[in-house]
Image (cartoon, rainbow, N blue to C red):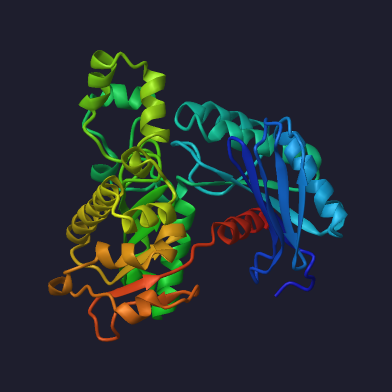
Amino acid sequence: MRETADDLVLVINSGSSSIKYQLLDPESGAVTASGMVERIGEENGGIEHRADGKTTEHRAAIADHTAGLRLVFDTFAETGHDLADAGVRAVGHRVVHGGEVFYRPTLIDDDVVAAIADLSSLAPLHNPANVAGIESARELLPDVPQVAVFDTAFFHGLPDAAKTYAIDAKVAAAHGIRKYGFHGTSHEYVSGQVAELLGRDPADLNQIIFHLGNGASASAIRGGQPIDTTMGLTPLEGLVMGTRSGDLDPGIIAHLMRSAHLSIDQVDTLLNRDSGIKGLSGVNDFRELQRLIETGDAAAELAYNVYIHRLRRYLGAYLIDLGGVDAITFTAGVGENSPQVRADALANLSPFGIEVDPTTNTAKDRTARRISPPDAEVAVLVVPTNEELAIARAAHQVAETA
């Protein structure tokens, strides 16, 4: 155990127009402060900062990520936790795409920043923002080790048959086309929590994990190692999501370009920002979707049914891939908070040993828990994800050995 509590990690998650952050103890998980800067680049930007049971808010135009992080640092100082004196041992950065280059937490230097920027063609909405956050943090905390933790890392070692697309092999090799997978930090963290919750060795477990938020993905994990996941070259493949289509016939893209005369950028926007639940129902917030369903909205009901259909399709595929499953786990915003989704995704599967207990499933409980009957063959679980803690622990470990 460390002798001082002043051995904290600042975790930064830089989005295209936002910065989420936490200052926490990587050993205990205790959070000193957290918050979010939003609407970077807009006139009505601002920060919401939580520390010591209080919330501090400021509204102002925020020009860029450097200005956003300066506002974070100023707000820390204003609330009595000056980061220069807070005992920050490392800064952990969530980076979405590591490509073939990065598959473990990596100490950041100029070459690493350049390499992450070079991967922006694989994640144009994410990696440039990640780079902006890294560069700003390095400027503001120049003497603190900065560590990149990659969303794709957990899935780097997928079996060849799972990660390979059936296109011309030379074209794929030249352009880095393979299944990379995303939400890896969450899937890895939750799979470890499942083993602890069940009192089992991860090496003895077959798991299916559904990370269901605005972005959504599933994974099949055998013996602690993933053998498949739903997201692919980009975070667009797989499950139906808040604004993303998930799986679709690739011929649709060519058809839209020829028939609707859409440009490739317009198609990209359509599939990433105007599809999924939003494209089918007009809303992408699951709570609003449920409200519409309750009013009898047919489009909302169809969107929900398409969403559940895709979940069940991957559940069946992964059951076969694994040759049986010991635990099915739901996590992230929808997965943790929608009993209806959990019940419908696993309905009528008792012949496979999969059952959901209605009482435990609908209980108001935010802790990790089992929601299947005690005697059910397959454990069905709800486990809150904690990507920030996982990033903090990884960053701290790298900093300690740097």
